[in-house]
Length: 259
Image (cartoon, rainbow, N blue to C red; front, side):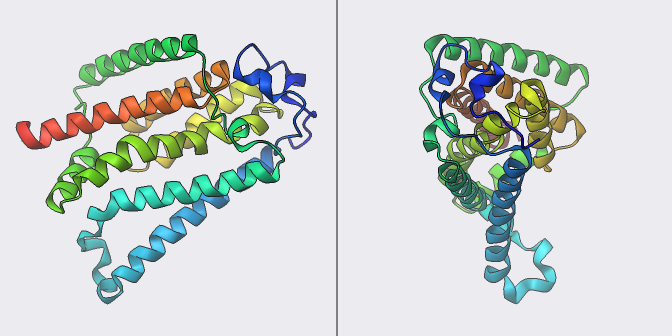
């Protein structure tokens, strides 16, 4: 899968808009190389966060699963995302591309934003109807527990920063921005890239049950399609920020006023 033509335009991916700027650039990383960089970034971020938790709680190592370190989850999320993005920025530079173009951090067209928000509204509405038909809550226990722990620790500003800004930016770069140049130009193709990145995105959210994973997959597939259609990762970033803002706001309402 690493046998990739010299430009993405050879695969007919260059419709009008930001993707036009990708012509005549060096080859992107191939399928396996892209996967390797992704796994390296995820592993390094997890190792740094996990190591810091062990170091800070070494005197409680025998009871670590029962200690309240989870109140620092927002900070851990920020650190892990920064590490992952830093690794992928390095990978983009080593590929010989301008970092912003490789990661898709280019200005989208207004039409792409309008279509993206319309598609998101339709998707969220459909998933919310399904949620009620299955008699499930709109807010997961993970979200309310994280909010409550952060509130009790006096870390609510950090939680809002982590959930609403850092996580959407970092996750879209990791799951949509970096993989698309190499994977969509490989034998995986655009449809395969959308499905695989959405699947990995859902699996990575281990805090959710099967229904939460299904919802995450659906949203991830939508974001992947919009990433390809617009040629810009900025579109799914803004939509991801919107989703996380709504979910965090609903968590605050449930904990502060509906508990």
